[in-house]
Length: 374
Image 1: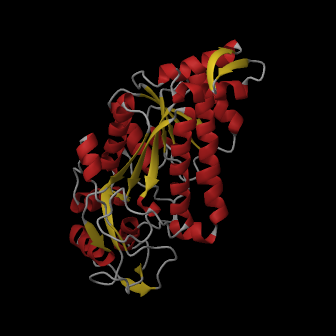
Image 2 (image 1 turned 180 degrees about the horizontal axis):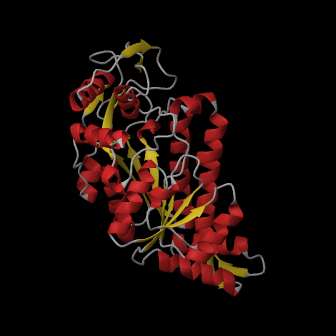
């Protein structure tokens, strides 16, 4: 009797190869004839699901978190190919990894890249990520984060690449009922950005059952920090919505003041509380997720955060401490879609993958300040 994964792969192969035929006995396949091309793809998929991971496609690898992860992958001797449209990324940030400029809307490009490169796994960072923009322009976010993601996993399935690490977000939780937030918490996103991340997580779940695609989704909290000595940090040419770069802009005098979006939340000082995790700790979590997929199939979800939350005003105080500069600020209205408190319970990833954060808030801000001053 064939297992469910093999049955699913056979049906998929025949859907793509109408010239083949299938003999079914009591509802289960018992004999199959299919074109050699479909047979080869099926065999490749089975081989990829058990082989050691060496060659990786990193989508969005020229971006902030992706570029730090690419560096760590290269330091550990993985072969890396970066696919990025450079809408927010920096080409120089990919280092010595092979770089392909392109977009997920180009399905022919995706098919060609997967055919030519023969990947063992994919890390998927590429996405639109601004909460307030997602509220104002949800169409962009569904097109980029959902439709683009479907194009990617369809190309993976077609090429027999069955392992994916997905850059998800704590935004899937929305306004949490309990804090810190565990992975079992109810997901009720309060903005289209979080909704599209959750939607793609669900796509991965269904693709696992139907096509044997195994995945790890990392729901990380507020990425921050930099690696200035390696020329890596957030893109300073962009308008930032993340708090720490905005506060540092004010410290440098690039902006006249920092606007605090709301001081009437149900928190100790009325401002939003977030869990800040260093980008290098996030990169390390992605490497551990790859190792997980070498031995375990299925769909896995982990929070990645420190378990310690800081309010907006606490971040501003810490920036003044690190920089030695006063930060002018004003209180503005809440941003649409912003939850009041997002703090991670990361016990699961610490227990199952052995991950733990190495950097505290002071080192996060210091590395960001060093990068900002360059």
